[in-house]
Length: 133
Image 1 (tube, rainbow, N blue to C red):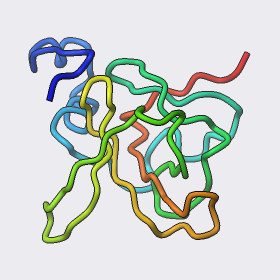
Image 2: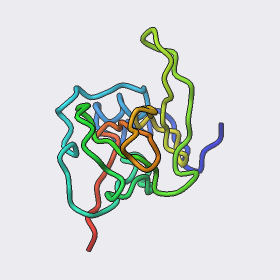
Image 3: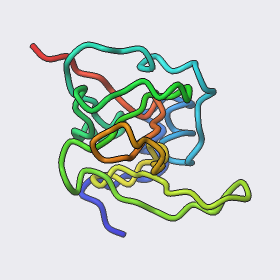
């Protein structure tokens, strides 16, 4: 797949920390409950840490008690793409940034109390938060 933002692994390593590279480019994950954005509750926008694309508005963030920041809907249609993930002996839906293909987390249809019924379970290290002015 061709993305708007394309870089080599070496170029990504130059701009990302080792943990960011592991999560964003190698589909790793941060330990639950450790992400700096887990308890962020100010109004604002969550961006892709790799390419700065706008991904989620704070108004869609909710406390799912899963250990990672959770959202019920991307900022706009086409902000993220979905990839079947059969790793770890299960079938899940991986969420990637549509602009650069970076791994963000997974989406699950287990949030019936939200408007979409979806739980976008994202890694804090994959996101950058920008508070509203």
